[in-house]
Image 1 (cartoon, rainbow, N blue to C red):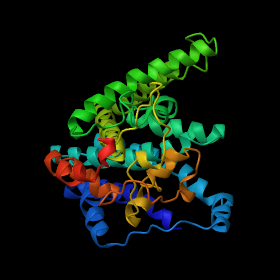
Image 2 (cartoon, rainbow, N blue to C red):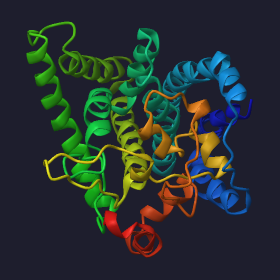
Image 3 (cartoon, helix red, strand yellow):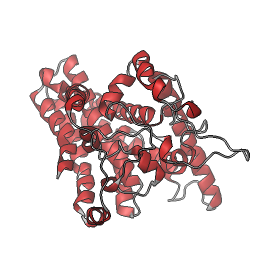
Image 4 (tube, rainbow, N blue to C red):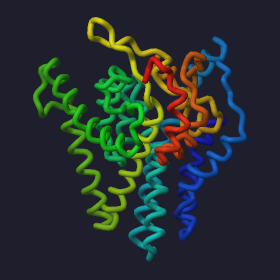
Length: 342
């Protein structure tokens, strides 16, 4: 039941938006001030589950239900925020606060959960994952992440891997443009292999484009231009948070290129791991990212810690804050990157 705490960001964000004023920044302060402070004092848990516990957790459908519940939570937060911003007289600083708070909800409980569901085998879970990507204008992530990032992670071919001494802001440009471009390239290859037409129902990138446009047009129709701008910018905040997580997950790590020209296989050494308990819960174990890349089909509730994985000195929320200050980030992280990976 500890994973119920993963709902804390939307709950605090929605309550803050309801009260207005300075409270509209509640999700921002909770995610990037209070949680990092708590991570400094809360324990680190590097324990793994025994085989019996793993089996029990896999058979417990509650773990899956907790993920699916994010769909009504995220869309409920969007509708509530749109109603508030278009029906109540708000100041500019309140609008900014609401945009940031909703964007954080879209990142933490939208894209992050969509990432987990996108690796599932059932059609229902995959569709729920795609639905959670829509508000952040990032449906193409579904294709590029599964068919591109996991294949090319920690190589120069992966736009979602941050280079050594690359700042977060440079990385944002690299990954946002590169991921979208690469998603189209992957889709074209898939169409060619399966002999699909561009208008095929299985041409995801075409339909993703239609769906994304329809989402924004629908908001404009019901909530006007202000609602459209609010949805647009909160979505941008959401996908920039995702890319900030991508930045810290693989920063400076490289897979060695073999004599054949191919790269060594992905192992537990090619992602940064964190066992800080609060970050693990808030992000549904995303912080055990090394094991996720090692065995991508593994469900979040059974991800393991590997002592050979590079370890972050702080949890993911704290590390995200550090990444906003490049000099500080480099000072903390550069010395921790294994010499053979720089």
